[in-house]
Amino acid sequence: MAQANKRPLSPHLSVYSWGAHMLVSILHRATGSALAFGMVLLTWWLVALAGGPDYFNLVNGYASTVLGRLVLFGLTFALMQHTASGIRHLFMDTGKLYDLKANTNSALLTFVFSLIATVAIWVAAYKVMGVL
Ligand code: HEM
Image (cartoon, rainbow, N blue to C red):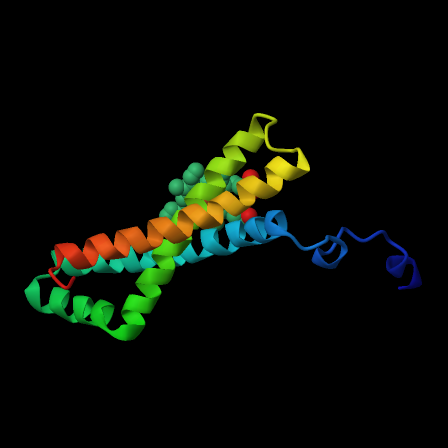
């Protein structure tokens, strides 16, 4: 047991200093997991679509509640943030954005993009529905 305690530990979140680059990294995993859950919801909605008007209206009714809209808004943000952060990852895979300033700025850019894109998508959706 004493031997096991002497083994080296892999780095923990606590050893890194906080910054946009760290937040975007954590959010990439969190949004990826949220999107996997979102795919289950999307599949359910598609099954409802194929299941006839009664079942579709039931599932659509859940989606239209305040809670349903909050979940969908969160999933929209998750998709935008994960996409922006994923594209940032692709740049980093080519050896770019490792300079600290470029790394932080690109991390901040993903938040700016995802917030604007999420609001734009919801404004467009409400306009299409005639609510706005
Ligand atoms: C519904 C769609 C998506 C789902 C469910 C999804 C899910 C995930 C999950 C679970 C991970 C692993 C995260 C981790 O454990 O750290 C991941 C990683 C990744 N995703 Fe997505 N993703 C989706 C869309 C996208 C899109 C549109 C992009 C755009 C480029 C993208 C780019 C990436 C990249 C580059 C990684 C690897 C990041 C790394 O190297 O650590 N994903 N995704």
